[in-house]
Image (cartoon, rainbow, N blue to C red; front, side):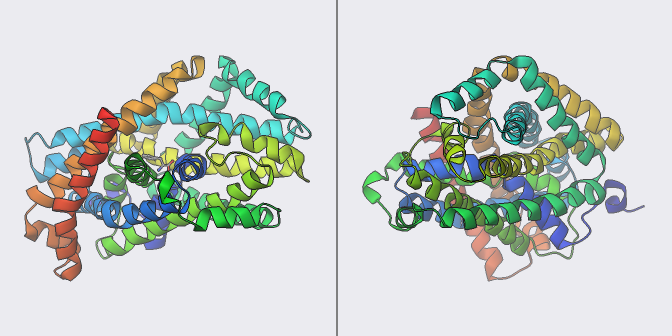
Length: 433
Ligand code: PHE
């Protein structure tokens, strides 16, 4: 049997793009992007973010896909098979470790979205004021067993999808979840546009306020683009390893980046009209999703349905990202330890669940793990990947995946000079800042 038929593969390019875009579209787009844009000068942030996605991150997406497809391995195996016994394999190890750590806290936050779905359905938000909603949120975060219950449920859903395999698990799940998410998001945007704050929101999202955009904002935009595209930890290496050899990597990468950016912008278009209608602060910060928005929902017609749709949307976005996080770890055990997929999925998912329990007991662990992975592990991983793909692989190796044309030459320049310099800048700013 060929490598592909043993390891599994996507059924076609659309299947791959949906799965990879599902990984990219996550809590980062819907929860993080709008408040970051709010804080950093609105359209100014959005403009720099879009440039970062396409000029700096897109070459790294291509690099990861290339390493995956050319080696047909998980991140550790990819480095090992391309340059045996070199220190570059550290990049792979870091990726597998990051996948495990990110998923451990991601599962807890995703659990909150499930809990809030139930609260919405039971009518807890209708007519509730700010203080009551804060109390609802504090009640959840202060209750470990309740969080562990939802975290376990979310992890089981993640494990079942990953255990199902590439085409019949991850791809099949993404083919349903991502379009459903897009449909709901478009519905929410349509609703938001009928609100009285829609005009102010449009002005906010379209007029750049450079005076609110600092050097730090520049790096925040770069960092957000990086996290949002699931870069630096081998998700795209792993997903690329299941991609058919006929598919164009740059075109696939472009579709993924386009979908991810579109979802972030749509999330902004859904959220800012609400923010302006109720006179909230656009720079409200991370509490926007779980504390501010429900207050607005509570005062709108169809409060329960709106809140339910919004938190369902968030949990679906989290699910298509969490399966990619688990798949990185699972692929490592399948390739390197010859484990069966089902065993690997339940074992890795189970251990990750246990590792996340401290986050449910004390939410300060979420911030610690998030800071460790997004500020250190992902930038270092991304740098290793860019340097390896650009400088260690020889042009013939690069061209066997990318072809010989002007696009490949542009990519080589970007991956050698522009992307690493930008990643170093992000990294230094986060460490020194
Ligand atoms: N891209 C995801 C988001 O926007 C998060 C993520 C990061 C997923 C790294 C996988 C790997 O939420």
